[in-house]
Image (cartoon, rainbow, N blue to C red; front, side):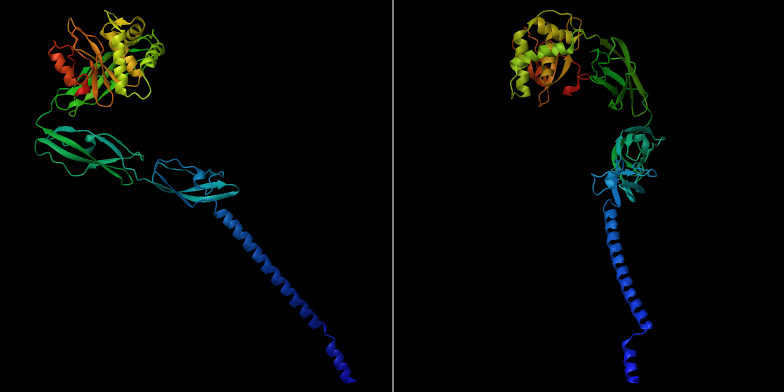
Length: 425
């Protein structure tokens, strides 16, 4: 009987063992759930980290002075982005800077590296000094520019003031990033200063039409007995190109010794009674008859020369102060003097796209003459369409030597001032 009781007792688990088995099952379920949750969080976290990290570059590198946009930091530039409000983008100085970028729902802290690899631009000039006045490096500099806005100028080697003469000088311009430009200038050492300022020669007085432009420096040179031709400036602030009248311009030049020379010119603005468009239309009608596709500039110039000589008759004219009027009269009346021939040639050459300039003789009490010079790609050539009594004269495409030879053997018919018209110097 006892054996049976023991057997039954072994078959029926007690409460303690049942609770142990239940806890074991719960631990397995918890461990499995925790592991699944951990895996899920890892996958989701990895995705969000990938999505976050793949949107922007950690660093952008730009050249000094460049424009930088927030989208430049995006790996996908088609997305929208902007700098955060606390971001300053200082592309005017080299260095590494932190910037804030916002795109979509994310904000990023990135780096902007601004580099400077461009050397300064420098224009130098020659300097004259006496032995007791040693110049500084900046005395040789006309202009120095750099994207940083800062240029340090110094001598590559120390200069000596122990002897008279002309000596080469190397000027170094360096920006804050260490980029350097070296330029060569000349130091002239003299016993005493020349006190004579530069003088101006050429066409200081000019006549133009309302609404047109003017090149104040064309035909004007500043000459100095020490520095030959020197640079000069023009103050034209008082000129009103849209209002007829007479205006004064001031020319100013400074030589290497600091002597300042000035001169004044008169700009006469004339009401454009003959509209440029009206004269252009007349010229285009002529060109349509004589110019064909494929013509070179030389061929076009030759066709223009022939048309003017064959369609113009010589007569005295009073159009000498108004080239546009002279061209208009030449087109409509088909006669005039050398100024009309010059003016109609100028208009036709210009409309045909041929480079040309004006030129005139050194006037005398009894003689005045005007003609053109052209450049068809082989240098300047004389272009004089006015007929002459001397039938041997052919005014088309003459070199300066050819025209000079003719002029000197025919009473200086084309004696012009080469200091004013420098095309052939």
